Length: 126
Image (tube, rainbow, N blue to C red; front, top):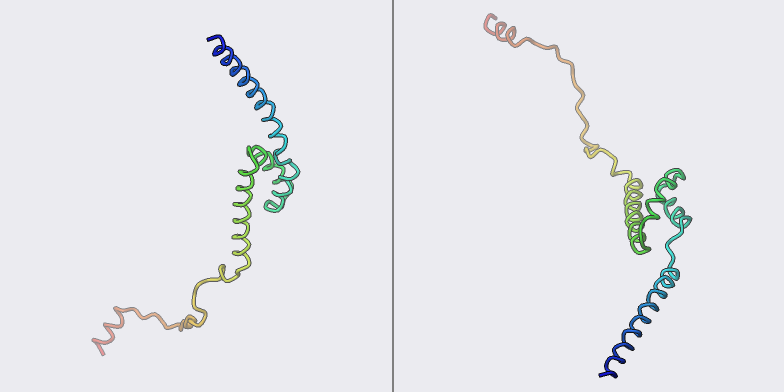
């Protein structure tokens, strides 16, 4: 039984050592993949916002995104929306009225207005 307790105690020590190694390695893994720097984010935002004051205003919100994958997805959505906007602005016909250019309005001829009551009385008493 002493051997079982010893092996159990050894297992507990090994587990503690394993946990300590994992906690020491975890910060090293985080350091290996650093968060995107503020300058990188500002450069990427400048492509979509065009104005330095807007970039400065929104950079802190983008820097608070916890990981690179989420930031990448947000930037992909921005890129897609930017592409849609550019496609709309390049397509001038999208902003043209949808009326048929061949169907011109007939010019209005100015006819004197005739009072309907006067017209009926004129017909009766001719």
